[in-house]
Amino acid sequence: MPTPATSLPRGSVPPAPGPWIALGQRVPAGLRPALAAVAIWTLILTAMCVAIYSDVQRQGQTVDFTRLWLRNLPIYLPLMALSLFLHWLFARHGPALAHPPRALGVFLLLALLFMPPYMVYQELAEAWWHGKPPGPLWELLTRQPAYSWWMDTVLLGGAYTVQMALSGWQRSRQREQQLQQTEHELLGLRLSLLQGQLEPHFLFNCLNSVSALVRGQQPEAALSALARLADLLRYALRASRSDWVSVADELDFVRDYLELQRLRFGAALQLSWEIEEHDWSSLALPPLLLQPLVENAIHHGLEAQGGSGQLHIALRLLPQERLQLQLRNSLPAQGSDRSGHGLGLASTRERLTLLYGAQAGLQTERSADEFRLTLSVPPHTL
Image 1 (spheres, rainbow, N blue to C red):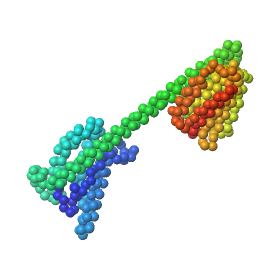
Image 2: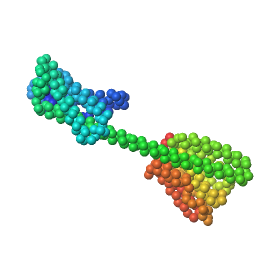
Image 3: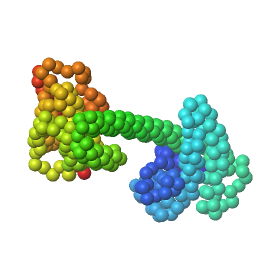
Image 4: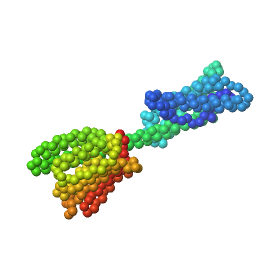
């Protein structure tokens, strides 16, 4: 291409960036590559024209900037089309072109197919601008100096390399997003399985309480227990479909569960509450988080003592914005054959790890006659 003082010097064009630029969520995805290619090459064209205009001004000459810009615009139209083609090529064959030998081979083939027509096109555009006949085809091919051929090839290589890098980055992001999605699905599955474990365990223990009333020939208490059990199961079914429930609802569920146990143990179950004054309906917990801990206290405390014992429940919001639940239950004086702390504690620990990571804590302490549990989690606002 001729390079008069008012022409765009091809050698000064930097390697072309790839066509991927985020144009906003409102732009249809199918139009983004075309708009990005037009925008990038237009910016490069404008920058080069500004540089030429400044050089001409320093030389004491004058040039019309709009005319200069329009003169060089046709040179960039094939490069816009090239960017779209490279986008399509790497979108369709990106993984195959990730291998260096294959990528190099495709680039050499692309250079052989693109460069000669592009050089001819530049000469035709220049002849059209000056109103001159283009001349023979062979002369159009050989009129450009070797330097222009070399720099245009470098320009093509830059566009190709940048697009290849962007394609690799996009594939890496897709793999990362797929991995995150898989991990999220596995986390949800593990939580569902844990919750599924707790619900049959809860139902089994409640039915045991009802059967104990039946064996004790307390039909009225058994009927009342069945009605309360139906309420508990309705809440458990509804809560299991949610990721979060209010602390107030969880407390009501625990109270109903303990009322069911009181029908079984009567006055032998000595309950004490220490619930801090707070709008507990505005804070949330994972569903069915508290009840297994209370159930564990009943199972390894009162039942191990033959149906008598004390249970203290305290709930407070700490100044450090931590939600704290404390349970204290009495233990049998001579020990118990009920080993471990039950499914409730093990499943709760795993749920806390999955949901909160290191932000949650579940500590237990055992003395000769008392078992103490402290649950601490960051509050979740509804």
